[in-house]
Image (cartoon, rainbow, N blue to C red; front, side):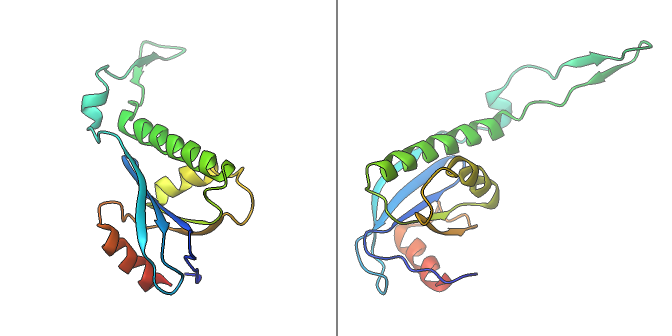
Length: 150
């Protein structure tokens, strides 16, 4: 893991597919003091509760056989839409110059979605990407995890 600094007024965005924490370092690089600026969340419902249709059937081009189509993963789609909303919020904060440096912390799958959505950000804004799921931890626990990674 490469070294990184969380400088004064740098942001740490901690998220997964259902919750996002927008944290700002009100301390300095040596003594990180993260403050929650904003949080977003959505209900983390099970896939069976999000979709009710049965998977479709496909008739083969010849013969009488049919095959089932793969069922849509509604839960995965809801998580991807939530992460796209988080990315839009980050872009607005960068445009308004509230965020000049940030660190993304998310599980690998969520990090991949965010990376694609934030590709248009100016170079150097994203200082580090950490592939960990820390969103369920308290702010002080997140600070400890980040300090251990530095």
